[in-house]
Image (cartoon, rainbow, N blue to C red; front, side, top):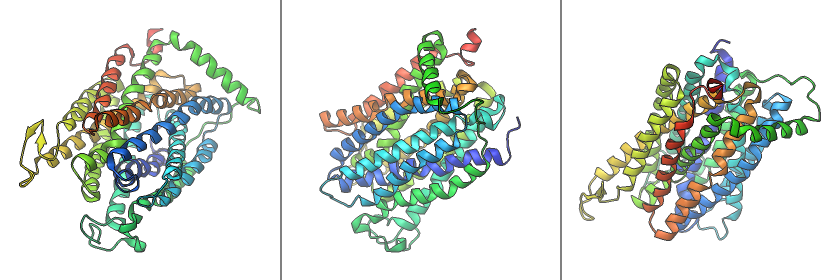
Length: 449
């Protein structure tokens, strides 16, 4: 199978189409807006945002492996991707309802969870098509390029939001020096609220190449109404057989922890900067641009290293660097870097902001590389004919405990009353993921056999 052509670009277009939800909504614009203006205060806002993401993740974790097993028994993935695009579209569009200081934000939180479930389940089926895009020896480069392409999509979307939709701090104009388009009113939070409908429009437009060009799995011979029963039977057999596949089991467990940590960083990074450093939309936007640029470069470079050395060394290296960057963030405050006082309230120093930007750049590069190598590693561990089921399990293990980072960050924030101490659970999750990689074989249990 040859890598390249319209099939490859079609498959990568999903990463481009889906990324603004994570970039603009979850991390840099809507999330901080919700915590600071909709929920009332940033500490309680961070907590209820975390509980909502955790709840959506639990629903996704319970359904993904079952749906993946059924899809494997049937064959084609695109009908499933289309079906689960609908809750994403409905949920993201509904975020427009999040007015500042609303008495009951529950409807918005339900819509957020719905969008999250749709976005994540479609990703399961798209990832399961990775072996169809190119030959085995090229999958690391393909995965890295796709992830990098997604980061560039998020970058372009964030530039559009900051340049056309949200005003700069202390101004009625955007960073491009123009009034927000469509008469969006900053006092009513309309710039941040419009990111939901914007993400929907972006997704609908850029999913067209995916459906037209990307490869799909053919219908299985004899696939009938019994595919549900066949899929569930296969899933039970796979789960029962996991103890006899120690490399696959160890990888699922390892990635469960370190991917949960990445989710925690992505979910709370913008909220943390808002509460601890007092950043507004402009500073958060610049921070987002830094992460997206370095994330794209990191995913691309990681893909090349994956192709040369395999995914395991890439994963281990990036976990170590990501842990160091996350730990460094804890030491930053308005007048502190590495717990050392810099500047004063009367004469503040720019060093904390610079240090936070540097940490963000490192987090972006390592997260991009780590996540691209992670889906390549699963292809090395799984059976090709059960790839959707494998990515369903991958999603389940990632999401079955994905409540851990949001929940324990929220809990640590509540108990300590400090956003800085709320970061500690993320460091623990990364450490556990690193240790479990010791039992993962580069070519999976096939090498052991």
